[in-house]
Image (tube, rainbow, N blue to C red; front, top):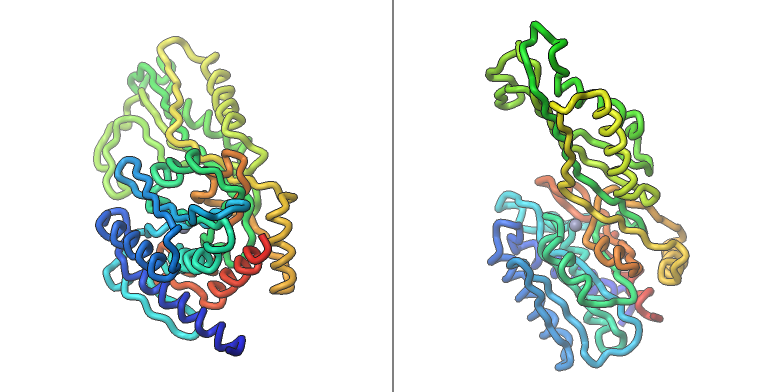
Length: 385
Ligand SMILES: [Zn+2]
């Protein structure tokens, strides 16, 4: 068989499998469809692997299922191929995939059912000769806490490869995240006598201004810790659709709250931010009497993904990328993925996947050549593990 014909066969397999996966409406409101997707994957692997030493294990936490597939006779370094089959909700028509010469279209085509198709085919190719394993999660889009967040301390891979869409960039760093609330309460009073009490909104604005000096946001795509003011509330107003419906202007506000979203580069820890916030608040408290309270609540903490660039697996993948495509593309990620859980245990994690366009929108599509590149680079990588 000529190389071209072999490639065509592989391309068709990747397209068909991606489209089969896109047909399942596996968004968070559809646990039945998620079950069906996992059953489909099981059957696809069983039918194709021709082995009776393949084991399927299903982890369940809080009704969230994660599928773990491995050859129980395999030896050698454990390479875990990791992907998620859950998607963001979309219209029914977005679950009817199609493709042309350039793209595969449909919800999840890029994020990340084509990546899942690639790792299923890689697993099938290597499950008899290497200790390659597959982990398919179903709650990545809602945080991953019951999926990989539950499984990661029960298995111990030597390396985790995640085929999230990275535009064929090798990704070894992702920002951490921190959601934190600040709540200010005080006695309030009448607006005609502002000297009787500090206004809680003024106090909160003061705190936010000081934080903003510490955390200025970049004007362009820069690898920097950022702070977003996600929501703010204070006084006694009623809002609807971005407009004030009712509420007094003549009150000294007796409350003000804010919800902040920090995204942290690897040199900023969660504790760095928490202590900055606390320092600013305690300084502010010194100027207030005991009628005032300022408290903070940590709403969510997302760990960083941080793999050493000198890790031998990273170096090997970079070298192969240069050999195969005559370029080195490495870029960090601003958002978090399931890979972060393994990274928090010190396990090397590498993300490498296709070019997804319009993901999370109603015109999601994945560039076909980038899916094939994903498979080819990881194939070369697996060859001499
Ligand atoms: Zn994803």
